[in-house]
Image 1 (spheres, rainbow, N blue to C red):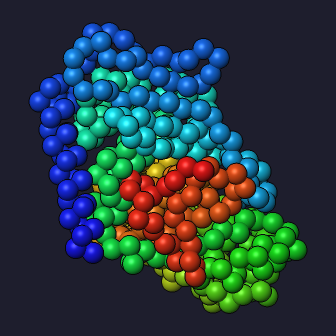
Image 2: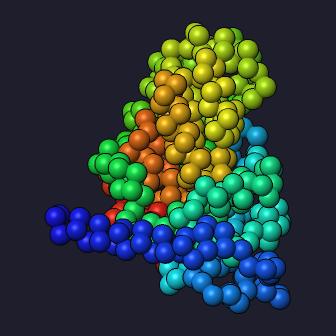
Amino acid sequence: MAQNRREFLKVAGLAAVGAVGAGLVAGCHGRRPQEGPVVEPGTDTLTTPEPVIAGPRRMKLRFYPYELQLQHTFTVSSYSRTTTPGVQVEIDYQGFTGYGEASMPPYLGQSVDSVTSYLQKVNLHQFADPFCLDDIEEYLESLSPGDSAAKAAVDIALHDLIGRMLGAPWYRIWGYNPAKAPSTTFTIGIDTPEVVREKTLECAGKFNILKVKVGLDTDKEMIETIRTVTDLPLAVDANQGWTDRYKALDMIYWLRDHGVVMVEQPMPVGSIQDQVWLKERSPLPLFGDESVQGVDDVRRAVGVFDGINIKLMKCGGLRNAHKMVDLARALGLKVMLGCMTETSCAVSAAAQLSPAVDFADLDGNLLISNDLFTGVTVVDGKLTLPPTPGIGVTKL
């Protein structure tokens, strides 16, 4: 252990020296006269020209679309799907490569076209040093008021790159104990009783808590079907599907009596007064998901929800997610860490924060059949963080 620590400090020290050296040559920006990003002909791959001035090598950004294939049809209260569009991102710098990902489920209102359009604007070549995250992310934010999934992809890749340069995973850089990573839920979408029973049988012996999508008139049938298979604790996600606060409260009491431990986004985003009324009376903790997108929404959640669900694709990446965890804790809110349908790239990135949260719903990579990476795993239902530097992934 002592030797590993010495090796880590040595690597970190060398990286810090390199970062300072880059700053002395060109600062964080060190902009070139005028070449921006270039898309290679016939591809969606973004490259940036090689430097024509003296100084350190600059970062090079590449990206390509990648559609995620779901193992089962996935149904929530507002839609069903068998695939999820995504975009993979890679950033090269001085022999290191950082990996990132954008995943765009329908409700985010983003697409492969919108993500690639955003990424084509990104010119990381102007920055001499990936460690200057404040400057880089201020620049990324200036390119668009939205595009959270695209920003998350670049942010994740930058964190992966920096962690690899330091030779340490981000949970160590942040000082988290990986042994405190919680169990993750496994999600069962809305379906027929036969399919729900089959899905529950497949996963019940592998997890310590399940997550059930509700929000339609089949909610009780869903829960009762699951209860014929397992008595595991359940979390439920209504995805804004309940519109009558009195019926919602009755449902929450019924859910409590059937082993449910928390409820996610029971009411529509705009129904703030109904949500406040429901929180004051609910016997279970209520978590905001669609109502809590980014850092600015955390304070607004106080008095409306008991906790928040943080997702990298909503908030723009790890940097903002880390801020949200700290702010939520300071405001007395519980914290849940969630994901979209994602490869192990984005899921493992989010998992770096998992030792600091109350609930984890990091199963997006387990729902697909075409993962590109290995990373965080689930052992006896519990998230297990690998020692791999950066966000903890290895590309297959």
